[in-house]
Image (cartoon, rainbow, N blue to C red; front, side, top):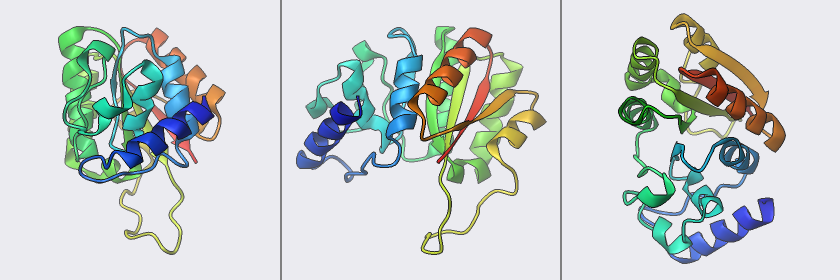
Amino acid sequence: MIAALAAADAALAALDPKPFHLPVQGLEAVVIGAIQGLEPTDWWVPGQRERVGAALRGVPVDRLVDPRRGARPYKVAPCDGSPANRALFAVGLAIATGGPVLVHLGVGSLSDGAFAEALNVAKLRSAQVVFLVAVHPLGPDAPLPAQSAASATALAGAYGIAAVSVDGRSIEAVRVAVVAAREAGGPTVIEAKL
């Protein structure tokens, strides 16, 4: 599956996607594990970097050029430039459909008020949403310093939401966590450490 994802990423890059290409490199296990843990009937809310994973759900790569289009028949939601807004969108989608929804986030979303609002509403409404947060180590060349005083799992705990931390480099660890979150029902935060 890693080769298929890399091929789709190269094909998407060649199509000059909007607003620009964000390679999936480094997130392959997170994306593949998430998709393998979902059922075809579950909604998936990727970010611009993860959107290429929709090809693994059968979405034609040329359909991914404009991230705002989404792919409704494949249960792939449109990408939003704001990760925290994606979290709110995913909660609303889970409430509206009554089914599982997985949303991809990064550590930058943790410091946004919309993320806190998404956790709160998800807990209040028992929305079956999986917040999959990819945690990248910040190196000395990072454009921004640390943005949150708490981890994703700590924030989830503050709202009484189930949370787990997994090895984000392991497809199987991510897949198992997503399956467990789906089976548990209600909101769950998965922190995928890279």
